[in-house]
Figure 1 (cartoon, rainbow, N blue to C red):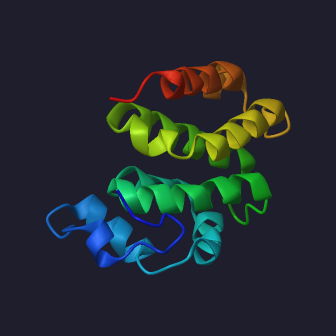
Figure 2 (figure 1 turned 180 degrees about the vertical axis):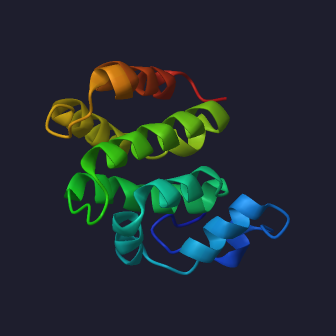
Length: 151
């Protein structure tokens, strides 16, 4: 685990990524950037950058997921549509709940703020429940997973 999660992840935190094309792509897009720096990356293409988050090692993920939470809460979505932002967040959270719940649980307060916002804004975001699912149900599934003891 990273000693100071408030510092930009180093190449040591990323570890060897060259043999994993998805992790290497995430490294190319995020490495060395602050969370303030990556806000414009999320605004330009939230779906692609969220995909990067899914393939990062846990130390960089914890740092950049905090930046993603900040992005979602900011509502400064740039070219991204609000429903895309919500879908991207749910997708990343579900992926990490399934693969490394401890990494996501590390950010449980930030994640909870985002989940509460998404649930309250589903109609405003134009996210039809028949297409995107019920945000309350999706958030509840993530919350349940975060409440389970981490092994």
